[in-house]
Image 1: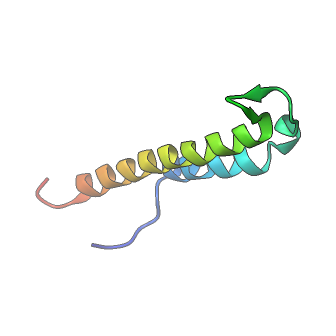
Image 2 (image 1 turned 90 degrees about the vertical axis):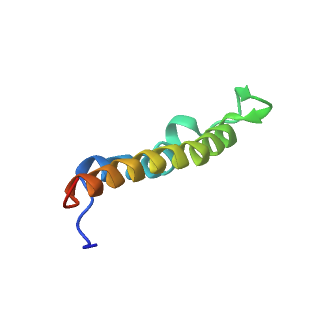
Length: 74
């Protein structure tokens, strides 16, 4: 199996959690409101930790489908 560059869609999906956690701080840097008993800023980070796995799972499935489509005999 040869190595090749990931698709643009995969790179965008992988960068969404990074951008959401790092560059949106001025938008969510507050204690109130409380969501699920957590200050909003902690809720935001915990939510994006979970959503990161969703984004990366989708990116992985897209790349696997791309690899399968390029295999000879498929």
